Amino acid sequence: MRRGVRVGVDVGSVRVGIAICDPDGLIATPEATFARDAGGGTDLRGVLDLVDERGAIEVVVGLPRSLSGDEGAAAQAARDWAAGLLRLRPGIAVRLVDERLTTVGAHRAMREAGVSTRRSKSVIDSQAAAMILQVALDTERATGAPAGSAVGGRKPRHRSGRRTEGH
Image 1: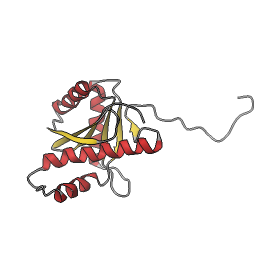
Image 2: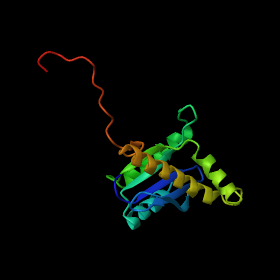
Image 3: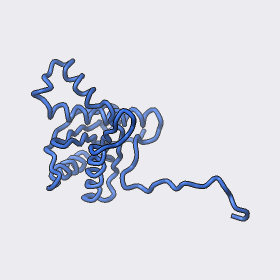
Image 4: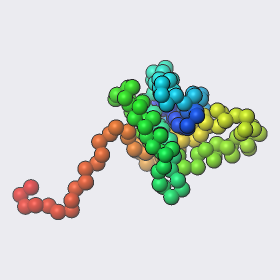
């Protein structure tokens, strides 16, 4: 398990939920919610400010997929948001992690805690971000490799199964 703070992000059409973990990568905690600013990028800059403030080594962005694994408009929006983060800060580590069922889980956790989900949508967004980040942390701890896929990284080259003589 790599040591270092990570920032988790749940990108929605209205709000961006933010979570953060401890330097040992044990526990993800809801942190904040920013208004989504697709045109102006204040949400992106807010996350980068948090990355700088906490010295985060990575940003984990939830990738919403359907239960079948297909990607729709929300997944494309998350990919675009993550790419926008890289445009503002080339070189920052950004990973996309499957977030299936995290919003459902966040709603359930809030209900179980006795919090009205209707009145606390921004809290749900940061709770969903914490669940996304916790899945990434737990996956890395279990596998020894970072969860999800790197944004802006090179795609793996596929090798053919054939070898030519002398090469």
